Structure formats: C-alpha cells, structure tokens
Length: 518
Image 1 (cartoon, rainbow, N blue to C red):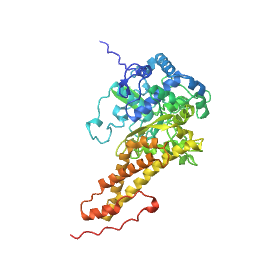
Image 2: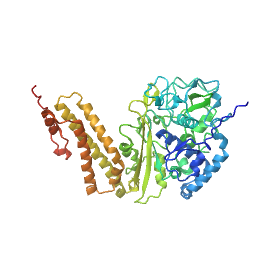
Image 3: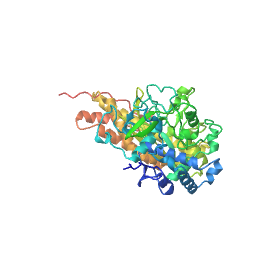
Image 4: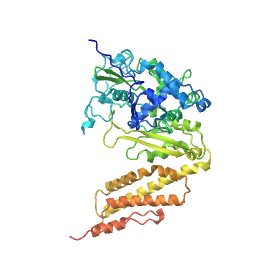
C-alpha cells in the first residue's frame, strides 16, 4: 500500500492566529477584510505581518505615493489572492522538491534536532524545565509552520545549530556559534508598525513605495524591491545568491538568518545568511536606532519587560521632535508621510517583541525576559509638530506628563528608602525599587489616558485631576510597603511620607528614628 503524501499548504490550511477568530489560512486573511488583528505571540505578529507585506509587495506594484494613495484594500486583496494562486505550490510545507522556507540540501549533511529547539518558551538542551507547558511535545503542522517562520528571521544565536552543515559545499566554514537573528538583535529589538482598523488596512499603511525604497540607497539599483524567498530560494550562505537576496528590500523584510528542513519528524538547522548588526550599519524598517558619531556608538531600542513599551514611547517616537532628522522606524515615518494628516485625526501604533538573555553567544528567554507588546492611539498633532510649533506642543506636553510620572516615582523611591533606613532595614534600596515597580504596574492601564491628556492645556482641570490621582497611586504604594502599626513604624511612616510639591519645597531627609527600648 502506497503511503499517502503528506501536505500542509499555507495558502489553504489554517495556521495564522487571528484575534477573536482562531487559526486561518493565507487565503482567508485576504478574503476576509473584517479580520481586525493578528493573534499569537508578539514575535509571531511581527513575523507574520512581514510575511504578509512580502506577499503584497510581490503582487501589487506601488511605484510612487500617488499610486499608494489610489490603491484600495479591495485591490490589495484581489492581487494577493491571484498571486497566491499562481505560486500556490511553493507554499506547501512538505513538498518533496521545494518545501516552503526549507533547504532539502541539508538532508544527510545536518544533525537532527527537535522543533522545541527554535521555540523561545520551550525547554531544550540544558534549559530548566519549570512546568509541563515548557516541556518537549509534538507540534502541529500549524505550529511547525509558525516556528520555522519565526526561527528563520527571528531566531536565536548559539551552538545548538549544526554549523558544519552547508547548502553550498564550496562555501566557507561557519565558525563555532550561530549569530543572533536579524530581527532579534543582541537583547531583543523593539519592533513597531502603524496599526489600521483591520489587518488589511495595517498592511496598506506599512507599504513602502518603490520610490521610497530607491531613496534609501541601501539596495540594488536594478531591482531594489527584489523578489520573495519562495520565488527563488538562495543556493548558498554567503555567495552571490545570498548577496542577491540580502541586497533587496524583500530580503530585509524577511531575513533568512537560519536555514531549516523538516525531515523524518525532526528538524535540520544550521546558520543561514549573515546580516550586519546595528553597530555594523544594519537597517530595518521596524526598529529604532539612535545614531552616534561612530557606527559602534549606535544604540538600539530594546524590549524591556520592566519598563514596557508605554514607558518607551517618547524614545520610540523620537522622530516627532522638532528639527529631528531621524529616519527610523521607516514603517512609522514613511507611512505617516503618506497619510491624511488632518489635525484632529488619530493614528495607531503597535510595538512589541521579545526580550532575550545573551550569555556567551547563547540567546534564550529566562529570568525577567519575556514577550512585550502594546497598542497606542496617537494624535496626529504630535506628528504635525515636526514642522510647526503649534503641533509640537501636544507631544511636548506628553513628554512633560511622563516626566511628572518619573518625578513621582523618584519621590516614592526616596520616601520608601527613607522609611526603611530610619528603621535600620538593610534592604531599604531593594524594597524602594519594588515599590517603584509596583507604581509603574499600577499606572500601566492609564497609558492611553496619558496620551489623550496631551491634548489638554498644561494647567487644565483634567490634567490637575490626573496628577492628583497619580499621586494617590504613589501614596497607595507607599502604604502597601510601609506598615505603620507600632510606634516606631508610625513615626517612620509620618516622617517618610512622600511629598509631591515643588522640588524647592521638599523637606530635608529625616534623621533615623531612635530604637525603642526593649
């Protein structure tokens, strides 16, 4: 009896998580304009969005801003569906000759591994197994598709890859440890893109025109957009084929950092095409970089599980400052340049990623590292402020409001620290940090409200009421961390009570409370 040929085609079979709907196929995404948001982890959202952008760019020519403005969501959908039908066979995960996003050349040359090796949250190797949820398991075809997609462009660095295996036998040796993924970076880049009301509108807002791609001067002159990987997979890791892919916008939208192949219920995995790091001139449309006088001084905006994206919003939107010459992140800047900029209009932003540890080249999620993501609705007046002081005032007011919160956090830290020091508590600094962390956790639900307050006048009743409420949150954290039952505790509590007046009005630190006689 002939065994039935295994097949899982990403065009037809459900694998894309859709918020409130479940898993759906590529065809479903373009056939249903009512789908609102991608689901899944923050990393899956980044990678799947970029894959969808690759499909739209390959199916819909957008020569300039005028063509972008005339493009409709219906045209995007129809063009993508026709394109997927044309390249349907290239999206089969188990095709014998051209399996989707895989390199059959690795068969017989590469050590076998498990799919859990490329899952950020699964325990593999010498990782500590905390619960059965992070243990080894059998992944579904849909999960396998997402893992390969994420692992290829958002993979981790380290020694778990078989670095002796090469798809180009004549290519140079790969070294002892795989490099960090381009979309991962050293500590986990914070990725951002414009957010529409639906998935299709989100794709539309983040499309770059061919004219914009050419203006970047980073890609091939003859064909800067290039073609997606499924049309022509690279045949080497560092030769002309790899360079042809890496030097196009498609090659940056979806980097092929790691090469995989599903084989006999196992995964073959090795290092793929090497991209420069942000200190070596890397450019990516979704990340934020702060350029220094020298390339090695360039800094990136990382995922911070303690700060969370809402506290990094001012840094993320650095390009909104008056007289700035920032060109990153391109998804936001280029998209906003093309949008209707009515002064009363709002625009959406999604930002997220995964924070990772990096130890001797090995990247992994542990300790305080985790997925982070946030959505914001921003007044267009913030963006208009780049060219006119009138608009800049609202973004400036937002930054002042966030500075006020920072000041309250500092007051809280000093108050808790002073309280415990007066009681001779050796851990006063650590407890003060914990109180401040609690304050930020309690303030996180107010992130959007703080943005909305930027449209109010600085001394308006709404702003003053909000600041009073924030002070109340800080005082509640002080109460929670500083018990006041015994006489000594009460005296320390009263003397250490946080004061939120002007800095010049603050009382001097109190002296230690004398110990009670036993």
